[in-house]
Image (cartoon, rainbow, N blue to C red; front, side, top):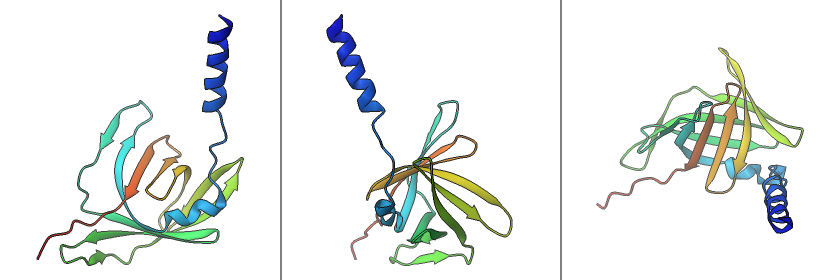
Length: 140
């Protein structure tokens, strides 16, 4: 019984270990991203295959922006002039992205971040998972 309790405690400590995102890691957000899945508060999941639109994110210090891009077969991108600017703040060991556009304001909590993927959770409890965009290369 003591052995089982010890194992359970070790697993709990491991699961509760500090998984906060360091400010030094925020540069990983820079680049092109495509959404891979959305997890809804009820636990349902919507997976995405090929995306016609991707996000370009650029971060500099405590601010950044996101633009919607549409990859073309020749390797270029179509884009709109719309830009979603955001401020980055650290609160209670969490990284919050605060967006502001002329039409709306909202927040997303950065939940996970590395060089190949990241995820955010919005105020409605919806989690968006992204993966680094890799363009489709068509031989010529």
